[in-house]
Length: 233
Image 1 (cartoon, rainbow, N blue to C red):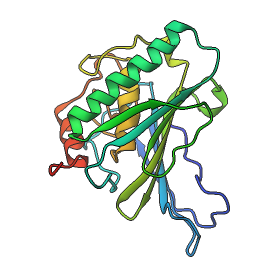
Image 2 (cartoon, rainbow, N blue to C red; image 1 turned 135 degrees about the vertical axis):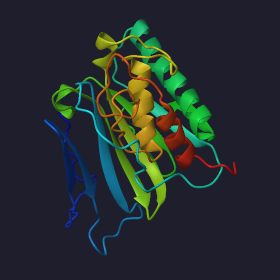
Image 3 (cartoon, rainbow, N blue to C red; image 1 turned 180 degrees about the vertical axis):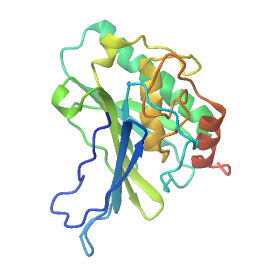
């Protein structure tokens, strides 16, 4: 079951929520709008989630969230993780991030610069930050990741991705071109949200809200990633 979004702003007074039900499985995306006159340079934000349960088939391909990164400069992708990970866990975290980020570069045509920062860091303007957390309280049900996207009008200003360290116990690291559930597939899914993609209703799409044994980057995924990329760069 999808985890509802929470307001990424403190003291916001206006909320706009949009929810959609797909047969017996409820898929919820909440659009959070900043209060009128609120002193925030970040505009509105939306949070999308990823989970691993099978979902009922839908009728629409991957959709855009209506915002994208502008310009041709490389987008910094920073990451952090909880202390106390084993060498194998660190290798899985960094390996999946490297593979997913490279896959994102190929799929969108954009450049991304991956770097580690200290745990607890937030995404400064103009960056994507991926935080790996072992705090189960952050995730609802079988949710394994979520993304908070900030944008001004149609321009993304920053994105904050949170991924469960529990993935390392469930899945192999995998590769972008693999079929099936993998840590890399989940990371690519969340990075897809971070560049402006919403969920797909194709069951085997990497941008579907639930991953399964046939999950992969489909032709509609590729089209979606191309559309949020920049042909001029």
